[in-house]
Amino acid sequence: MAPKSDFISYLCSLEFQKIAFYKRMIGWIIVLVVLLVLFLIPVGIAAHFLSVYYNKQEKTLRDESEAHRKILDGTYDRIWNSSKLRTGISEEDRRSFNDIYPDLIDKSINNEAFVDWILECNPDFDPNEYVPLLENIALDRDRFITHQRRMLALIKEHRLLVSSKPAKWLIHDCSAIQYVPMDTEYARWGRRI
Image (cartoon, rainbow, N blue to C red; front, top):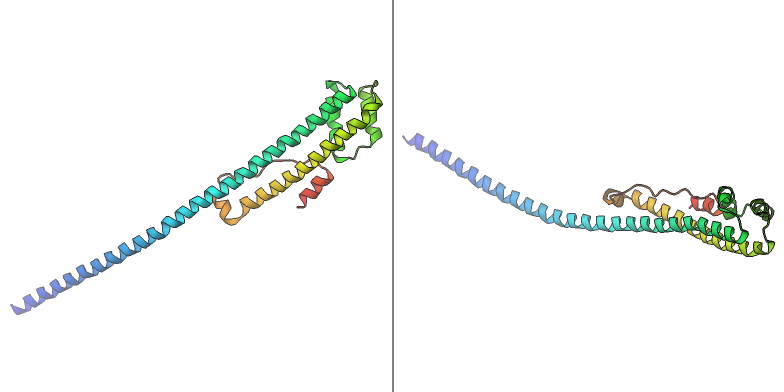
């Protein structure tokens, strides 16, 4: 009977070895899980704060570009209203004003062509009003060019932000800012930025 008891004691020792092995494995698994959790929590927190930072930066660029778009749209209205008031032209002439507006902004219209347009719309135009009108247009043109230049810079900055590696994975809205610049010398300069 001695051989059977040796065999049983051998099996029992194997069983104890297995139990000891499993205890060591469970200990290592617990250590790995704790280390993984301790690593993932800070990484998750950092990713969250980076996401908030990049999304706030993207929203700021969108809001600023929208403000510049409103200023650019307002320039048209200011030039139209000052032209209408100073020249006495009617609201029906707005369509023909749309045709010369880009040339007014780009300074590619000469004074004679602008006077001809005014006289075509209102033959009773007082020439004394022409110089103040041109001064107003020049001020609005400079304002328009400044804001359009800034708008193009914002579009470029936004495009760079949403295409950079960590930001493009964390920003919720990566769509481009939509804006078609008026074709002026400054807009051509802005496209080369």
